[in-house]
Figure 1 (spheres, protein in one colour):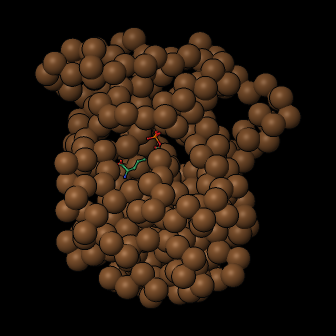
Figure 2: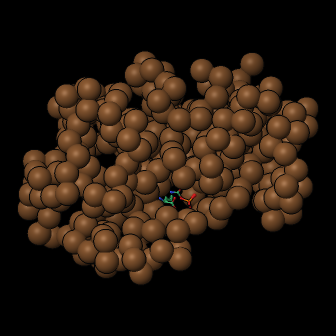
Length: 301
Ligand code: CP
Ligand code: NVA
């Protein structure tokens, strides 16, 4: 494993090895056990989109690991003014030990990896959000102790979160169901790949997806960059909501997860969100531990 560009590039063994290390790093942080695996290393964090969790967890994560992190916004780098990715990647590779990128086009992240000579981490593209899903898998395993026989249902837009949850969930052995409108399906190649597992369902029916689920997951109806589509999307996604009624279709002890930020009253009701706030904020915390594990795996000498 040289980069984290998408979960499809990782084996089940590699994913589990990241999760095991994340559990260990979480334990060490809670018990104030020093874990300076990346002493003297610097991570560059390139952001073409907004972020709270990703930015803060990577920056704090590098600090915890004995290294440092550099925030590089597209608003004030030459990359944001059109300097080619191919050149930026080669320049930054000479200063930094790793790069985390949040941008629009998955191709940009792949190009960074092709032209750079240091590990590249996808901090979210329109196609994938692998760091989030590693934290999600960590959270699910903490509560359910296993992935085998666990059903995860994703309700809403077939977006970057849906794509990565399908790939991550299927790779670790879960059953995955996605309920979305026809015009907002996940990536067709991912759907085809997941369907071959025999553990994947794609439907318009939120109750079919949620039936006997152990984990219910949702995300915003309009992702970053789609803000001008919100009125059209509000109509298309009406009904694609995690609410009390939908919870009755899932198992009584079902978890509810959300990558955040959440829009109460749209993809999830406020009552269900608050009833599952402990799980959702543990999930947010786990971004820190899971990403530290990714950085150690990729950047440690
Ligand atoms: N879930 C997530 O990636 O949050 P941010 O957009 O705040 O980084
Ligand atoms: N689908 C959302 C996820 C945010 C973490 C977006 O891309 O905006």
